[in-house]
Amino acid sequence: MGCIDALKPEIILSRTTFKEAREYIRKNIREYHEVEPGYKVFDVHIIGVPPLYIGIEGEDLIFPYTKPCHGTFVVKIPGSAEVARLRARKGK
Amino acid sequence: MNEKIALILLGCPQVPVQTSVALYLVHRLKKQGIRPVIAGTMAARRLMEVADPDRHYLGEMTDLDAAIDEITGKVRDFDLCFVFIHNDSGIAYAGTMAYISGAQVYALIFGEHAEDLAGEIEFPCEVIKAKATHNPMPLSRRLDEVMQWAASTR
Image 1: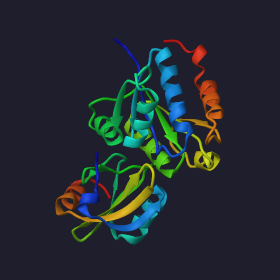
Image 2: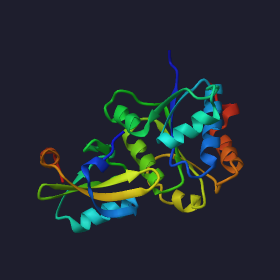
Image 3: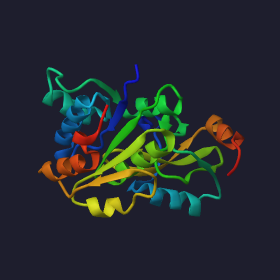
Image 4: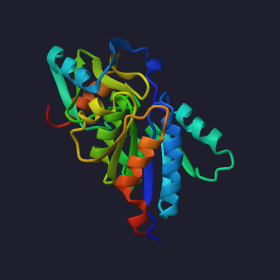
């Protein structure tokens, strides 16, 4: 079971929808990359209907995290390896 | 062996009809010779297991993330996928399944906001919806109408 709580994420938005999470990242994060549903980051899947975005700020990733009972959260977690992996993908 | 397999993806179990209709769906699928695999949160799976302690209906059960891992990793896929939806997260999971899986996706939408949620569906799937929260009959009847169990063949 993927659980990001142990990574002590900074919660930017809580209990929102995956669409609002998408819009937040698109409008507020200068660098963001589109990923497919099911893309795995920090051992959790990005859930939702395309387009889905993951933002990068410095060494931090900003992404939507969906819980079945509590909606979607936008979280910020540091992780240079994940940042590099995301940038290495084609497209933005 | 050409056995069909159906993934039943449970949502948050806070709306009572989910467990009842999911067990009913398992029963109908098995009668059709389709093997059901249930994925859900720990609580959603425990509700099913307690309701069917001798496992007359239940077979394989798995965690949501494990099921998604297997599909995205091309380890396995399913012929049918039924997603129980009563909130935005349910829509998100159904959209994910429509994208990652080759299964025919059925969106079972229920609860107080069934109509509004159905309007959020913008991906290929068959919508089965009923404004059902405590009484499972509207949703199970709608399921019967759409699936036409009696008319289908193995």
